[in-house]
Each structure stands twice: as structure tokens, then as C-alpha cells.
Image (cartoon, rainbow, N blue to C red; front, side, top):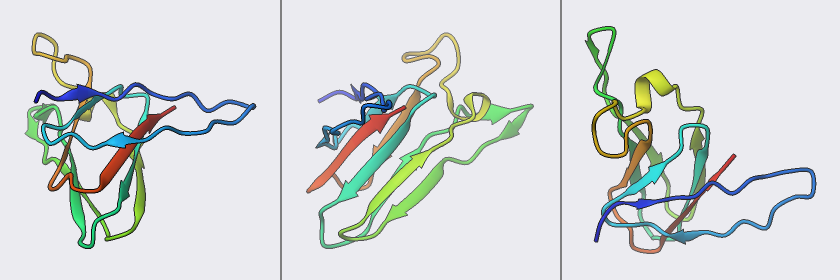
Amino acid sequence: MARTALVSQVIDADGLTPVFAAANVDGHVLDPDSYIEVINGAGAPINVTIETGGTLAGLALADVVVVVAAGARAKIGGFDRRAFCRPTGVSDADKIYVNFSSVTTITCAAFR
């Protein structure tokens, strides 16, 4: 299975009935102007890792790891393009990579 894109659902004045999808074992690709919401239906916490673009101004950037407790939801976002977008010239350039430590009973969706 390959990394899959999460298409951002647009929240507007009419509201939105969100649609969540099963988390992909190979991770997801996300637009940088979005945020991701993760629902952990598992009985244990999971880690959601947001990959960084590698370096910024010559400094190495560590990936961001967000712990989502068992049975909890988390909204993750506010991605600075300089830090989180994949560099030009690589696969999925100008996109963000999101990974999960476990995908069993984990769902997610992207919003903007």
C-alpha cells in the first residue's frame, strides 16, 4: 500500500458533516494549508508524526510527534511551509507527510 492523500474538507458558514477515513499504514499526504484531525479508537495511545522538510536555514529540524491518548481525538496543524513541506524536486513536493505508530481503529480527516 502506498501513502495516500487526504483531501481537505472545507468548513464554511453552512457547516460540514466531516467524513473520516481509516489511517493508512504507509501514512498520508496533506496540503500545508490544512490541519488533520485524528481519532484514536484503540485501547492504547498512538504517536502521530509530522515529518519536517529536513533543514531550515542550515539547521536540522526534528519531526513533530503528537501523542493521541486512547479513545481521544487530536487536531494537529498550523504547519509552517518552510519547516514542514517536502522540498522541491522530490515526490510530493510542497506537501506534508503524516505517519502513525499504529493504524488499528485509527481514523483521520483533513480540514481547512
